[in-house]
Image (cartoon, rainbow, N blue to C red; front, side):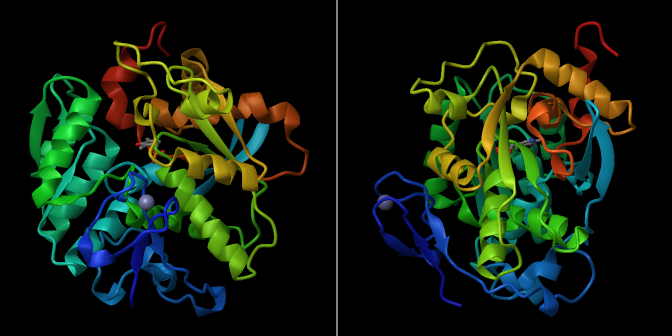
Length: 372
Ligand SMILES: *Cc1c(COP(=O)(O)O)cnc(C)c1O
Ligand SMILES: [Zn+2]
């Protein structure tokens, strides 16, 4: 299989073994890979590799996995609205990022890469570290000094090497890019393989829905890796004639970091506040794929919704009171239901993506004022 990395901005192409992580022109790269999907050809257990016919792996049969099974599509009710919650927080490391890490790390194995660099302190670092441990790949995680949480403990325990960089998040990204000159830069914010991994979530949702598309899908968005994976999968399914129209994709951000809304209103996104942000997993000021996210919103008739910390806390409780403990970042998507509910038609089917496990955010949840 010959696959190229292509630049949607200037059209440049790179052979995949060149391991470029962005184009010379500065734009992100996409994969020149358009698989033909046929639901009738699916076979094997309910796991990531069930969708191997649409995954850009050369040797899918040799791929390493934790035997991940489908995550439940569980009925819940938020603000009086019945929804289906996609419980991706139940994956091995506790977040949806396992889907992307699974594909990216297996691709690294195929390319003979033995060392990766990532600059996240959160769930993507956890997922990358765990799948690297599975594959015997050396993982180097760069994170801002002073940043410590359950997630950093998890990363370190998997055996990844932590590099604490003084300064801001951008200083950290620069240090990682420097280190990536002699390792593979596995940033989920840029990497197109990551998106082809996260797209397994929409294939699962569709198969769990007997190939009937939901009407609305609500996703918390930082760099957009799950959002764009869903968009990618939907486009593949439309090309294959499995669906005839797109669900409306709703991108949810926090009031402290809302580059989508800011961009639509022609404003710059302000600096992040000094204190830790409740929805930390979606606090990405300059998502590299911003335009692609806006395009997906446009083409699906979707929208972006911005939620406050107060709404996030209420949503976190609303979910926990139904027995589902998620992290504040995921609760942002639940909070969006309240803002959308007056515009939903009665019969419409709504899916909410529950991206991360609450147990990862105990210290944060504990500090919520007038707590639970
Ligand atoms: C990373 C993350 C997100 C946001 O994902 P992006 O790919 O950055 O848009 C949402 N929720 C949780 C729990 C996350 O870890
Ligand atoms: Zn380019």
